[in-house]
Image 1 (tube, rainbow, N blue to C red):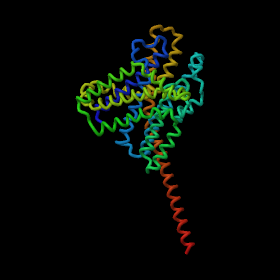
Image 2 (cartoon, rainbow, N blue to C red; image 1 turned 30 degrees about the horizontal axis):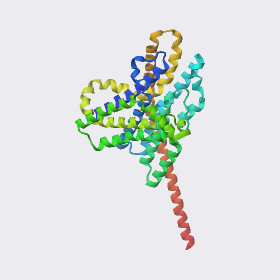
Image 3 (cartoon, one colour; image 1 turned 90 degrees about the vertical axis):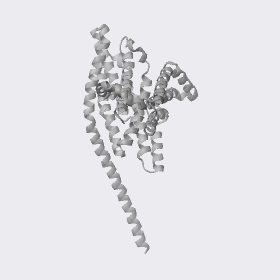
Image 4 (cartoon, one colour; image 1 turned 30 degrees about the vertical axis):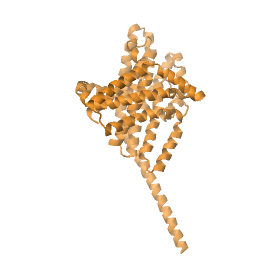
Length: 384
């Protein structure tokens, strides 16, 4: 992946993370963020973009460097847990502190208690029809989807033998349940986008038309009212089970938005070398800020909620929103830097553990084979 294409992906994922941040800041802070009203309802769309980008990036790393299952799994676990572990710890600490200051604000967040933390640690928070939140950290739901997309893709990519591969994928799908699988096509759109950009490069005129048309299409779709209307169609079609689908009840809209976003990525990847000359001046700050996208996504909600509660008695008036936003972003930057240092340690630990497990399995398989061969030998001798 060339530098210009990589920079475009960084811009896109940073924009998606900031949209989610703005949506929740508008909801949690008194008075909201009226100057940014035009993105205040696009949280679900931003997560859809994350799914597309996730599939694209995973397809890239599998093709270019993570050729073994152990490397792939170690990278995924390290990437996830380097932020998930501190994010859940911060959520527990801040929610307990916030509940002491304003119990009413946190009453609903405590519904699942310790079980919510445990289920989130195991990414079991969205299996089948579950909707378990780790205290106030509501954005965590998407990781309960994405983790299983990683695992299903790994089974399809690394498990040897067609029959074994199909069984592994089927077992993982049965564990996930319908809710997670309904949005998997959005993630697979990203995988398909990577395959298309590798095999065929659009000409710049065609790429410009595609990028412009899909930008307009995304805007029209987001402002058309289709999201609510199509959800009603889904509920009518699926009946009583539909309300239990949570975010997946928007499956029709998410797939349509995800497909347009995917085509936009395909067009922009072809234009990236041209636009890279324009973006060159902002490359350094974009690289720095985009490194915190995962941290922004997982840390922001409990921090925003706590600061909104803790600073409210100070009576800052119009200054309250900027003070809370700056304090939240500063804390995310500090926590994100610590998490990033934690990742290589986790990757080495997971790598050693997976290598040890693989060797143990191979040794057990070898011992079983030797036992079978020995049994055959004894039988033949006995027969003589």
